[in-house]
Length: 248
Ligand code: FPP
Image (tube, rainbow, N blue to C red; front, side):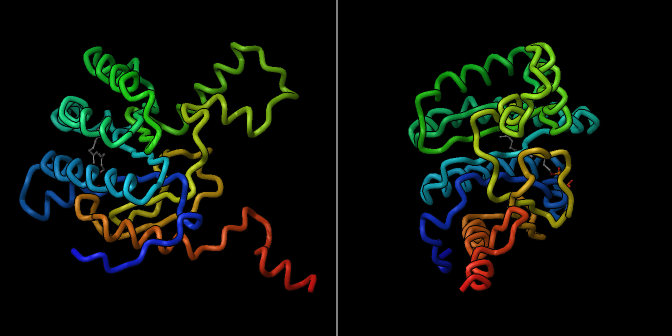
């Protein structure tokens, strides 16, 4: 496809994009394929979007790959998603490293099969020095679980209640040290947050598209970035332009 849409100026780009990669199952169903074929196609697309982030200079990408609720899916699909995570680490780590991608895991690692835990920890360790793109993989992740985990840690650390601020809470989350997402993309048209980054999304901008994740390629990603660049982020205040106008 041609580069039909121009990319916004670097200062207008989001520093952190988070994606709910939804619609793999319906993509497969439409083609008479098993659901796992949709997840495989979704993985191919993830590769395209990672490359695009590196090319566009977006420093943080967070992907929702497996939620704490996804254990309730048929066993074959759960096992298939675990296998995909393993395959991605086995097959893609070298290229990810070459692209300067640093991998982090968000979620409860200790509930995953031990072989996968080791692979994830090794991928995190092997890419620790990279800084071009921070790829945060939310796998066995849930926003409520993350907040509960943070509260438990705060209590263990005997944090003084008076010291609890938004900044302190942020430091106790899995995303500690990672800026809040500027833009959250949800594919396949659903209008819900699905327990994803529920604390961090307080002031994120949203881009929701009916496109199923396997078809959400570089061009539509670019379009989402252009849409984001045109937004007026007010963080609960009034528009800076409006404010300046009223004081002119
Ligand atoms: C939601 O689509 C998608 C998921 C639950 C899994 C997302 C996983 C990938 C794209 C693979 C990449 C994974 C890793 C580990 C790097 P859905 O199955 O809910 O779609 P549906 O709503 O159409 O059924």
